[in-house]
Length: 145
Length: 384
Image 1 (cartoon, each protein chain N blue to C red):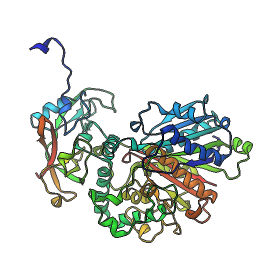
Image 2: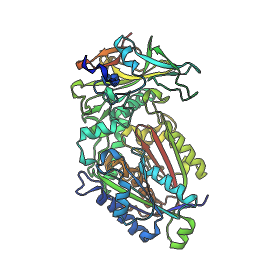
Image 3: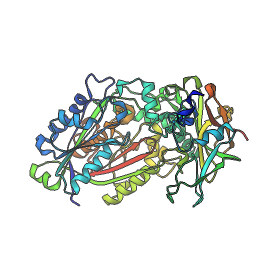
Image 4: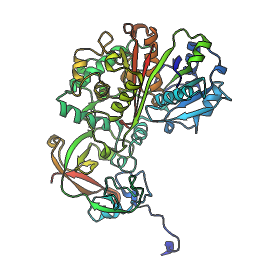
């Protein structure tokens, strides 16, 4: 292929969400893991601190020696809100709800998946699942376990 | 450290679609504060210019504004902490004077939000959150505060009607504040039946974008004496804190940690407590924000903020008047100017010059100004 000689920029993170505002990040592997069906955080190999969203660097021991861990099982719904207005670029998605799940060691911020708003109760168990979006974009959503 | 006083305050009218440039907008508050302080430009040792830069075409607005106000060649600094920029500016000005580096510093906050559409504005506001991990889900400021509202209402059994009471109060005073953008009264039913924005928040739970500027001039005790300032208002406590930007990093959804921490610092520094405060300005960008502020500042126990608003204790005649200038909800919220406008209101109150909004003989006042969704928090305590 013609482009082979030139080193391509790693812009994988452009695929994250309806509109991504970040292209280049050291945690781009997050996207490959999403494509493979797994939502992942990172853990510092030295001190064991778990990060979600994933980070490339541990602020506690100043190392960049991190390992990926999968977000598995269920978290508790901490709070949520359904939007009736959206920022530029998100109108097609309306209405949608954003939410926070508490997994104990870490929390996850994201969108509610296919659960109707009236069925949501704070404290209910939900799981985090990979969700494919139009145009090859990808994110994750919260659904019933 | 030496004592520091506020010797002049000013504010432009908060409006939709200001017909002028940012330097002209900033000049309005500057002129108002200089007339108030009755000092010369050469009395100002340095300026701290405050705004959220994503609304401006002008890169590094500090120099342009300092020049337009005739404040060159004095040094000028630029302060930005989103919606709390100008109370951050005040803390910096306090530090510059208390350290003895300058004997007088001006804090000039401004924002001209009308250059861009409301949707663009919301998108930029939303980018005050975590752009890598949150914004791709389509977030906006109302939705973040709505998540706090949902958790708060659920946890404490507070109702949407309790939140609406806060909007009704704001509108009561917005009507008598000539500088407010929203001058109309609001009925309870009107709040409850308003269009939803981000559940459980509705249109009337949200403040209005506005264009505006504010100005606060601080001076050392010696400068106050030299100038013969008749009614100095002393800065007694300045508290500030920050929190994780991503909601996933937060440990509390029924209040703002930054407000609790900044409040505790300010009370400790001032040597007084919540019961000593006679008038307060809190950051009511949304009704839920004022409700949480009552509790985070110690005016009410957690979950009991509703009792304050139900009993009208935060009205002008109540025991802790809050936002009796209309607050952000009615006065409007020009990001970089908001903190300075809150400080101005409390200064006028302490001097007994607040006109129709005046509360009875206040001795101590408090300003609570929040940047982002509890990302930054500043609490300032002022006294006569």
